[in-house]
Length: 483
Image (cartoon, rainbow, N blue to C red):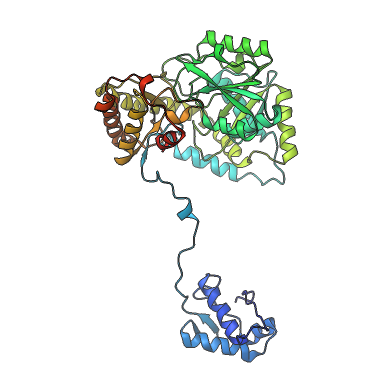
């Protein structure tokens, strides 16, 4: 019985009370507050609750009976037999439709979800769900998560977290950058960042009022000798520069560390996919070389799944204390749910097994991509690592042509132009090979490779132009390329 139906009455309105009751019941059925098969209150009970005579409710019921919405069952009561037709509930999808939905997405930066062993994944979630709920979040992160991260970093990245440094849970790399920017910097401070580089980090800095200064990159990653004077921090991706894929050599790592110590600057090392290396062992992390000036960031969103929504920050105690103080001030903490799952995923060795599996599963995907490109005479740049390769093109016209023709054929490519902070000067596409399942990757790559080969040949009107002769991209054309 539904004794709490919303039936507002306005005794000053010209409509009779029985009509208002009937309208309210009809609206409740339309809004699915009242469903087919639901038993209505007796006329006496509803009249008493509404403070009206029984004749008012009986009149409303009679009207709805006559219209066919209600049916009476002898000795049982009155039931809703039919509900008015209604449009499906709106979710706002009409205003948030993804224009790329349905396309085969070859963009970079996605994990290889197909490689996650389903039994281990379910086991971790079940075990995490068995833990009792907590009344308060741990601002530093769940102890089991932090222990799992420390073990992971030691085993797979050679970083002894805890030796003069502290591990904090984060909500991911961008969230960690935002926390560092707010906790350690002041509005108007400047930060150096690779160009082209990771624009979500740029956005996080700018949201905190920090000025971001572009630094060129070459085959060795960020060019230390081009860092502008006066910066308070340097953000970089030394293990696998995003998006161009370079690995910063040991000599340049030393150069960057010496710069940081000499200028009292701290380095933010984004190790977004450093575990994914297939040719040689990775070089030591900047954080293991210089924990005094390096803040190390990592994430699960590139090596396991975006579902978890967690990452980590490793830094010296005064930096982590500042971050924790900032969290306490604004009342924020990373969600414990994903932390618990990662902790359980690591508990019985499933995380280590998953990483070993990734190193077996991902290289054939990369080989498929490289082979398709090589057949068309298209070389790739970047180290044999991570989850994407880069194909350079002669200029913005070629990049736009490749992106547009691929989209028209159902494949989404990510142009390099949109990853620049300053005027774009490197053109081409970054091709991710982990987001799609194996069958879709095999279907998408021939299309992408054909479009890139066509673009690389250039349209006749632009044949023979050097990259410097290409027209400069405006903000509008950068937006076009990025779509």
